[in-house]
Image (cartoon, rainbow, N blue to C red; front, side):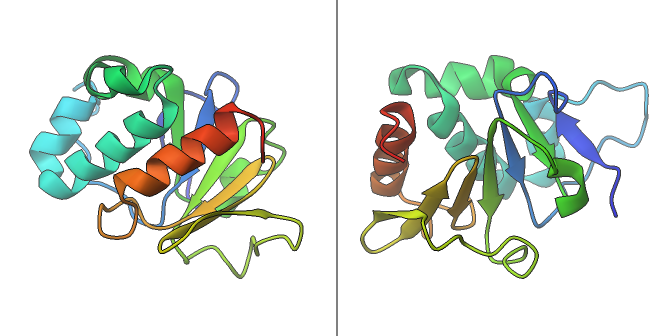
Length: 152
């Protein structure tokens, strides 16, 4: 079990992302953890991850960049262990295939997408890894519509 948590607390988060990998954190506990600092420490890979998260949670898709840079970690919680997300009422994005044995896709889940696919059964969203090859803008748009319009 991992106690490591990033971003908004489970009680305050608008949604949770269950990630299969952890970023490198600042070495000093007194140093604030921010998206900018995490990108600086982890490079372009984590910039892409945070960008996709922001595009999924931004109220207005056109504001995704300011959401990523200014308030993403105030809006979302990022967990790294299944044990951390039990009893969540908010949407939980289960990222990648790492957690499928512990959290299998439910039979009643709604399939979203064509080439790249996500599945939704509230409160869970099983989605590809947060990389543009696996999670392109077309899937982001379809998934946003499904979640925001309560079709899923």
